[in-house]
Length: 93
Image 1: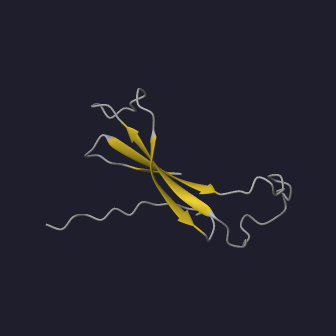
Image 2: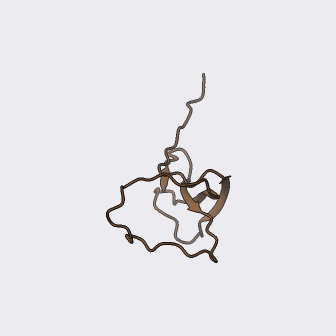
């Protein structure tokens, strides 16, 4: 997950990578192969990046009276991202 700071506004965003798993397929338990390398290639699979919006107060604290809302879903067919970074582009004057 990766926070995107929005210093000018009261909405903050969180990006989360989510695997779209078929719950009928049996999967290996985590750490079942403890000696396996930290990264190994896999076949492409369906996944998504969910962008969640959180409202803040005037003092930039989390506004707990408002539920987070799902702002955007980006679907992929190449697997879940392992690393997410925001790349803001500054406006031209």
